[in-house]
Image (cartoon, rainbow, N blue to C red; front, top):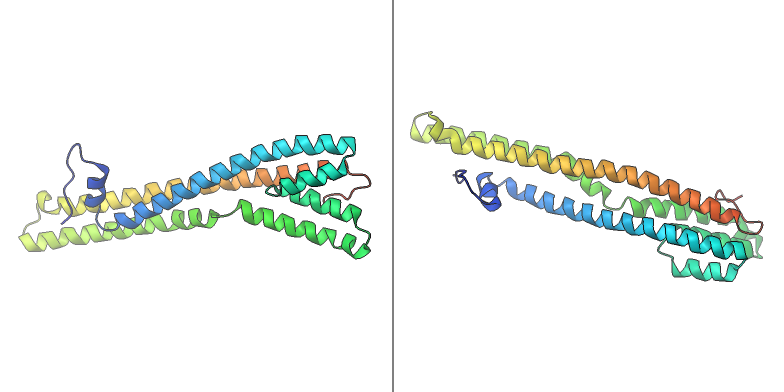
Length: 221
């Protein structure tokens, strides 16, 4: 039988009162918060890096220091804009026409890599957001079954008999909903942030490649 809920109980007591289905929900919560914090840190770092790179690269391009621009791109190859601009510089200096023709393909590969990097671990939040309510619902069913078992064992149906099972089912249901809501809200927020970053990177690449001498545009033309 699950422990009864009492005033002043700790989180651990609450988890115990929710039954064994609380353990996967606790795991889901820890994993989702890990993904949330990691993505927040990554997006913040990327946003700051893009602003810094925009300023430095623009100044160098306006001065015509293509060598310094290339060195800057290689030193900041963690930034999507730097990798794409470096591909543009290599295409600009390429004497082999086949290398020039392949620049558009290289650019598309960089774009796909950007999308993959920015959306890393999104699937975890989506999976947790979808699965958590069902885990909580399973806990609800288990709690109700426990209530019926208690009634059968005691031969009576008073509230004191079924209270433990009912509380277990309600705690599991609430926990599943809370974990799911947090994961889904984070997923949607990160989707919005991902879209804005992809647009920012696209605009940044277009602005920087326009400063190249007879440079290609962001579509490889």
